Image (cartoon, rainbow, N blue to C red; front, side, top):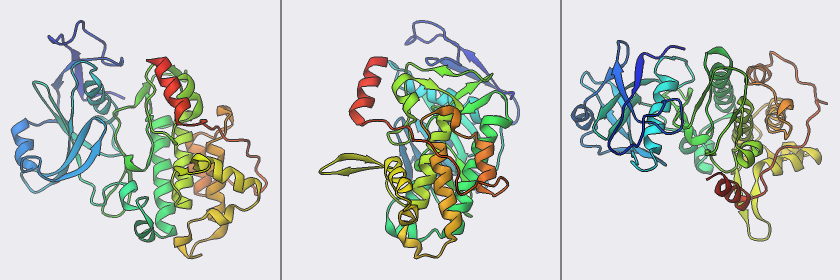
Amino acid sequence: MGLPYFLHCFQRTSVSSTVNPSEDDSGCEIVPIPKFRIFSYNELKAATQGFRYKIGEGGLGSVYKGQLQGGVFVAVKVLSVELESMRGEREFISEIAALSDIKHENLVSLRGCCVEGEKRLLVYDYMENNCLAQAFLGGKQNRMKLNWKLRRDISVGIARGLSYLHEEIYPHIVHRDIKGSNILLDQNFTPKVGDFGLSKLFTDNTSHISTRVAGTLGYLSPEYATSGHLTRKSDVYSFGVLLLEIVSGLPVVDFHLLYGEQFLVEKVWESFNANSLLELIDPVLNDDFPKEEALLFLKIGLLCVQEITSLRPGMSRVFKMLTHEINTDDDVMISQPGLLGDLMELKICQKRFS
């Protein structure tokens, strides 16, 4: 996968040394070549009416709705570049490295960027239905808007996009933060995997050991959360959690006064063992769904979150199972899921890494 940008590392007064942009800490000058647009800061400020309409908020920046000259609507992400940690710079480079030269129906399209002084902005196609977390997973009223067909199509689209990232392009891309808020929805509710600020590029089939575990509690695969061991199967785990969430409508992490944090993966596993998976399917569907297919989706989700990573299917196989290209027997063997004990365990692990 060639980049339509040359990423040249430069030495800034706030950075002690020049660093390779593929590493975690970097400062880079971006020199454009055709097919990718460099916007000026004033151009994007005018397009967003002074960054007036905020449509999203992330850990390292905010997203604003804008309109370019010619009438095209865009989403403008303004990264907060922290000079000491360089996290914003890392995210900026990761987004460009992952998205600047790929086009896919189920991946968000990156139109260009802005680099002026310490300002780092990214420009994407505008998504009329925001993200899956807001359009669907935010509450009962939201969930009622999406019938079973939409849920199925969204699940299949996400799987198709991840299969492309994992297996059809080179270097392979591991997203590292698959969750509802990072799945964008266009006017037709076509899902687009977005926010590649934490992604990693893999040039072979080896794994990666990270000293900076990144992701979201509940979606993080246990082996990655506790040891920093990252593979494409880490994304498969996160997708499995999201699939269980889409079918059940239940929160990924819930809090119970008596039992503390309860993870969706645990609930589904218990229901599977009790042969009561049907009871977990989102009640707002009012039984207006094909029961066999809904149960199949829950079982596929459980296959994706198995503790033994080698037993998790690859994303191309997941896609084929979801689209019935591969038959999944009713008596399919599903082993125990991987579970992160609790929030405290994650904090302890991340403290050890840091």
